[in-house]
Length: 197
Image 1: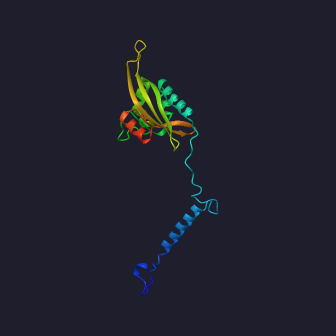
Image 2: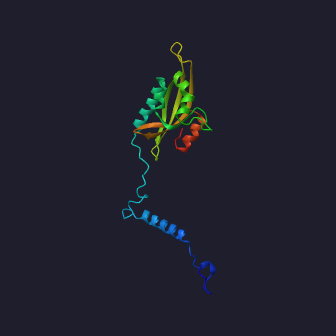
Image 3: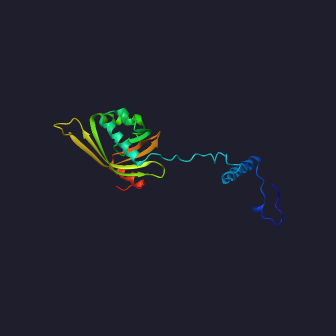
C-alpha cells in the first residue's frame, strides 16, 4: 500500500485491492453496464434474456368453467378427476392448516377422498379477482351435502361462507392451487388479495 504524503490524510490514501477483488469489481461493473445498454452489444446478456413472468391467457369465463368442472368432478364422486383440477402443489384445507399437512395432491387425496365419495357439493361464486401476477382469487359459498338422500333430501348441509381459493393458469387451463373452507383463514387471505367479503 502506498504511503500517504504529508498533506494527505491516511483515510484518503489510495488502497490497492488484491487482484481477485479488482477482477470481481470489473466483472460487476461490466454486468451493470450491460444491464443499462438495451439493444446494444450486450443485448444477448443473461440479464437481457431473463424471461418475464408468463401472462395468463385464461379469461374469467374460463375460470368459472374450471370451477364448475371442479364441482362436477366432486358430484360424480370421481376423486381422480377432482384432483386433476388442481396443481401438484395444491394446498387444500377445511381448517387453518398451521403445519401445512394438506399440501400436495397425495395429502389432499388422503384427507378428502372420503368426503368426495360421500357428499355432494354446491359452489356459489361470490367474487372473482384476476390478480396482477396472473393468478385469480375467488371467494365463494361452499355447501357440502351429506349423502345418502332420504326422501329426496340430504341428511345434512354443511355451509362454509366465505370459502376462498386461488387459481393459476397452468398447461392451458385454470387450476386450483390454494383453497380453504375455514372462515377465518378465508377472510385473512381475501384481505391479503384485496378481495372484499
